Length: 153
Image 1 (cartoon, rainbow, N blue to C red):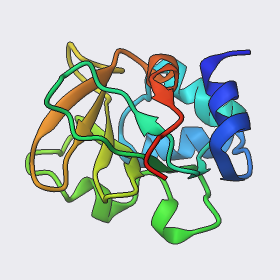
Image 2: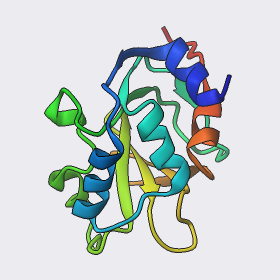
Image 3: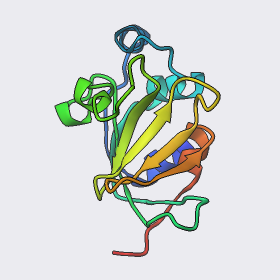
Image 4: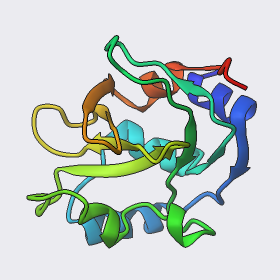
């Protein structure tokens, strides 16, 4: 079982309906970017969902402890969890054409960000609500492999 499937089986409290290839292609057209292959496959096979706050492990020792709450999805049943909303993209200056895409958030309001362009295409970052950035993983599989059971409650 992949780390992504394990995480969904273990911590997902709500799974969003799977999108069609056409829905993902329409998202890419609207964003004017091609999503990294592994992330595109993730959307088609699992899409987004709501999680029971597993702890996100970061290689940077300065990273605050946070729990994963949402992975945004294509055609999500909730407007606030829809992937690629204009308000999500507008959070960042100079993100036109799109360079980074918010793909999720923590229970503390921090963002999970996917690089969709440049040398770090496919890399996933953590963006603290208070401003700090940390690299989390080289791709979506590694991101999910870096989740663990939280011990805070």
